[in-house]
Amino acid sequence: MYPAINIAGFALPTAGLLYIFGAYFTLSVIEKTAVWVNHDSEEIYALGTVTLVAGVVGARLVFVSEYWAAFSTNMVSIVWPLNTGYNSWAGLLIGLVAGFFYARGKQMPPAKTLDAIVPGLVFGLMIISLKDFLAGPGYGVISTVPWAISQFGISRHPVQIYELIAGVVSLGIWWRMSRSERRDGLLFLITTGVYSASRLYLDALRDNAWLTTNGLHVWQIISFIILVLCVFYLRYYLPAPTPKTNNQ
Amino acid sequence: MIQTQSQWATLLFLVIFLGGGWIALSREEVSESASAIILTEAPIVGYLAPDFTLQTPLGETIVLSDITAGAQGQPIVLNFWASWCGPCRIEMPDLQQTSMKYNGRVAVLGINQGENNQAITQFGTEFNVTYPLLNDQNQEVNSTYQINSLPTTIFIDANGIVREVQIGIITKAVLEDRIEQLIAEAE
Image (cartoon, rainbow over the protein chains, first blue to last red):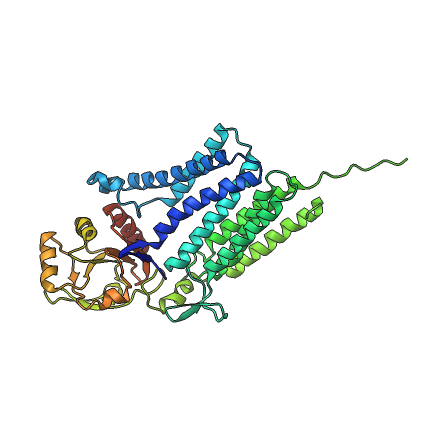
């Protein structure tokens, strides 16, 4: 819809702008949520920053190494322009590894840390949905529902809006549960489980979904695995069985 | 909330059963997945690239759909540019080198924005451009492709589907990355 936003004669790519604002707001979110789960907000903010910076730099460096022949003829192109040219999967992996070792080095409690950062993860995914909605790609299947979005004369499910709603619901559940007594890690499992379940359902409505060679939705499979893992680990949060009394 | 092992086991079973079932129900015929979109022409990812006919300053006519037509269809890199656009000038040598490297496997087309044949020819000579630079003086194609920022580069696969819209300057590495993906899919 809006691949570029024109401000005072300058066309700024919607996706790039949203990623920058998204990173800033995601860090702000985890800084706040850390306080709500009694975690050190500065530590969580630093963890988020390390993960993000390592992810972005790693994604760029892996891409540069993949195309070194092209970059070596113009070294400036390694650092500019930065609007494209990242290996996103490598970035994700490097970011997670960096975050893991940072948290371990700082001896951050794993379950409580996950509770604090999960709203940031959901918020970050919501930014990507918003970017897809504003920048055009990834609309839903053809639909006649009254709230369908018309794109080039064809009415489609606004699937990214559904994803945003799923994110809001997940964050709402997180917020509601964070107000009550609970064991560490439960917030992470429930929030991640709810969001994964909704993405598992919603990806079926996507028109240009990423498919396996036999037509299965890749994001559905990923969401399904995460959901099953979340439910599996819920087992550890069951109340301890009450010992049977022996009335003889 | 779940209180017992049996409630938990039931939940786990339901999640696996319903989730797995939903994945199976959502399965698409791979060839069918694209057909719903490709009926529509639009300059956005996943849609059929809007067709056009334009001429080079030398009078050669280029029809977009001719390039992707048939079994020997080629991927296309559409680059929208203007001679007054600084970033377009910076990326032009990379586009030229890339077009030479993948000559015969990918079609690179430069679509000018609103300038005359003389300006296009001068620009082509200045940068030794060998791929077609097309005249769109009344900006019909620029308008169809909703170009509001230069340079913009659009990657189109061998089936004529828009795969990526890249706003802003593009590097040789990114060009090669995207082109190699398109070639691999076409083969």
